[in-house]
Amino acid sequence: MTNQTTKSQDGQARLEALYEVSSQLGTSLDLSEVLNQVMDAIIQLTGAERGFLMLYDEVNGKLHTEAARNVDQETIEGQTMQISRTVLQRAATTGKGILTSNAQEDERFSTQESVIGFQLRSIMCVPLRARGRIIGAVYVDNRLFSGVFQNDDLELLATFANQAAIAIDNARLFTQTDQALARRVEELSIFQRIDQQLNQSLDLNAVLSSALGWAMRHTTADSGSIGLIEETEEGELVLHLLVDTHSDEDEQRFVPVNHPILAQVLAEKQAVFTQHVSEAQAIDGSPAQVQLCVPILREGQVRGLITLESQTAVAIDEVDKEFVERLADRAAVAIENASLYEKIAAANQSKSEFISIVTHELRLPMTSIKGYTDLIISGMTGELNEQQKQFMEVIKRNLGRMSVLISDLSDINRMESGRMAFEFGTFDIRDTVEDVVDSLRERLDTRNQTLKVDVQPDVTAVYADFRRVNQVLTNLLSNANKYTPDGRQVVIQVLQENGRAQIAVIDSGIGISPENQAKLFTQFFRAEDEAVREQAGWGLGLSIVKKMVEAQGGEIWFKSTLGEGSTFAFTVPSAKIEAAE
Ligand code: ADP
Image (cartoon, rainbow, N blue to C red):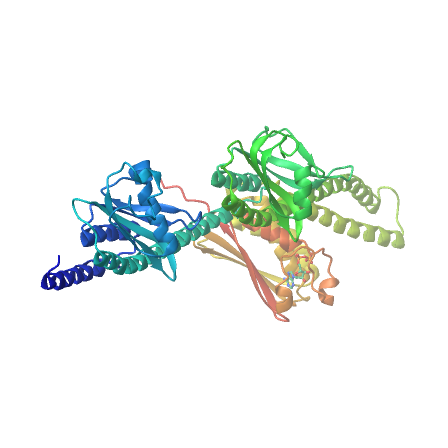
C-alpha cells in the first residue's frame, strides 16, 4: 500500500469503520454483550484471523480470558499460545501497544522457548485503559502469509481500545452494582421472612429451631446447634444446647464455659471461625472441617450461641459468618421475648395453682363457720342478748364479703387459666332478668330504689350459659344498687339487635369520672370516692364480667357522667332459629 491516494482513501475508510463500530458501543450495559460487541468490532476493524480479550480479575488480580474469536479457551491457555499470553501480559503491564510481525525474531519474545517451532505470526496487542488504570488487554494475530499488521492498524486498534475499555468498565460497574443490589434485596427479603417467622411464636423452642434452620439452610452447614447460657443449680454457667441436630430431643447437653472455643466467644463477644476442628474444639464434641460459632448478644452480654459445622472445608465462609451474625441479632430479640414469656407463663402457672389451693382450702372452713353462725343467730343454741346478736350479724356480714372474694378469685383464676367451663344452652333472657331482679329485690328496696324493667317484645331466645349470664347481670345490677343514692331509679332494658340480645343496666347514681373510666375493668380498681368506699367490694366484679361476656361471644361497654349516672350494657348472641318444618 504505497500509493498516496489509496492510503488516504484507506484511512478514511478505516475512520468510517471505526466510527461505525464505536457507535455500537454503549448501547448495552450487559457485560457479556459488550465484550462480544468489542471482540467482533476488533476482528472487523483489524481484519485479524483470531483474537482474544483478557481482563484483570478484581479479586485475585490475575488476567482472565473474557472473550475470544476463532480460538477457544483451551488453546489460549495451552502451550501453543504461550507467546500470545506473554505479549498480552506485557501490554497489560507496561500499558503500551505491541506490534510485531515476527515474534521469533523479536528480541522481546525470542527468548521464549515456545516461540520456536510455531508458525510465524503477525501480532498486535493493546492495553485496555479506563478510569486511569489498565483493566486488561486485547490481542489479535494473523498468519504471516495472510496479512501483516502495520503501524496504522495498531493506532486504529489503540483508538478503538480506549473507547471499548470505557464501555467494558461501565458494563462491569453496572453488573457489580446490580449484583450487589440484588444480593442486598434478596437478603432483606430473607430477613423480612426470618423476622416474621421468629416473631410469630412465643414458644422458645420453636424460635430457636427456626433460627437454626435459617442459619443451616443459608450456609449449607451439615450440622449445628443453638444454645443459651444458663446457670445450673450449683450456680455454674453453662451453655445449654436447646436445639441440636446431633442429638434427640430428650437428651440434655451442656457445654461448660471453660470449653476453649466457648470461652473465646465469651471473652471476645465475637464470632469464632475454626478450621480442622478437633474433638476438644468442637462445641458438639465431634471433629469437623470447619466450625462457626456466633454469639447471640443482648445488651452487650453473650446470651447464647449458634454453632454451625461442616465436613467440607469450603461450606462456611466469611459471607456466611456475616449472615449468621445478622441472624443472631434478630434471633436475640425473639429469644428474649420467648424466654420472658416462658418465665411469665411459669410464674402465672404457680400463681394460679396457689390461688386454686388457697380458695379451695378456705371454702371448707368457711362453710362450717357460716353454718354455725346461722345456727347461733337462729337461736337454736340458746337465746342471744342484743349485743351478742349484733356481733353475730357483723360476723355474718364479713363472712359474706369473704365468700364473695373467694368466689371472685376462683372465677378469675379459672377464666385466666382457661379452666372455666361454660354450659351453653338456649334460654329466654327474660328468665334471667326475672331471676336476678328477684334475688336483688330486697337490696333495692332497702335503699328505696325503684326498678323499671323494659324488655322489648321482639327479643328472641339466646344461646349462652344461663348461670354465667345471670352472674353478669347480677354484678351489674348490684353495682347500680351500690353506687346509686337512696330513692333513685334503676332501669333494666333489653333490646334485640343484629342477631343478639342487648341488656343494659341504667342507673341515676354517682357516675364515674373520665379519669376512672380509663381504669374500669382492671382488677382491684375501685374509685377513691367515699360513696364507693362505704360499699362492700373488692374491685373484681367488672373484670370478671368482661371476661365472661366475651367468652360467650358477647361484648360489654359503658357510658357514664360523673354525678349523673352510668349505663353498663352487654350483648348475648341469639339462638339460631331452626327453619320451621
Ligand atoms: P366493686 O363494685 O367490688 O368495687 P367492680 O369491679 O364491680 O368492683 O367495680 C369497680 C369500680 O367501678 C367500683 O368500685 C366503682 O368505683 C366503679 N363502678 C362500677 N359500677 C359503677 C356504677 N354503676 N356507678 C358508679 N361507679 C361504678
